[in-house]
Length: 190
Ligand code: AP5
Image (cartoon, rainbow, N blue to C red; front, side, top):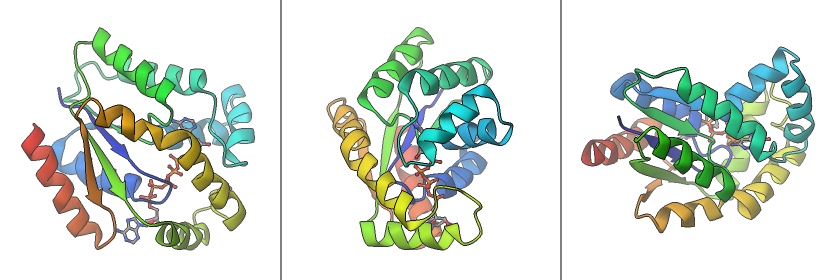
């Protein structure tokens, strides 16, 4: 099994690059953002609760997200491995993921961190907001999401750096060039 965390701030290209990675490397994509938006769309109790946090640019509580990830991993016992996109987002989530994977005897192999400056992130997300229909793609909520990223999510990079798993990738440029840099790192680590 090969497990990859695609890490980076809102708008850094995690979703875009995940689509390319799953095609080339046949990994199972787990995006906590997509899972939560599906719960919101179907107005499940979890979705109704999560929406309050998402619309404020805040993180959904750890226990909710960790529970979702655990059942998603269990649902794919024969997978070649997973791409975790938008997870883990707190050190508590990273520790919980290590425990879940330890139990399955399949660790995280590599963490690819997409590096994009804040001006570019804001421009990309405002542009996406014109037709994404996402309630968090407006200037006010994007600014809150970026703040949440710096305060709560950025420490996750240090967590993986201490395990020698973190690799930084320049996330500005064409989608193709960035994917090529990502592919090189995955191939070296496989
Ligand atoms: P989530 O859905 O994970 O959003 P995010 O991390 O804010 O990331 P985005 O999806 O906005 O960006 P991305 O990095 O995937 O970039 P994309 O490829 O789309 O989370 C949403 C909310 O859910 C959170 O705020 C939180 O409330 C909750 N949540 C989710 N996970 C959670 C967790 N683990 N714990 C707690 N709460 C959680 O690209 C962005 C745009 O840029 C697109 O329009 C794309 O076309 C464009 N683009 C991509 N690459 C390039 C490029 N190279 N050049 C130019 N444009 C590009």
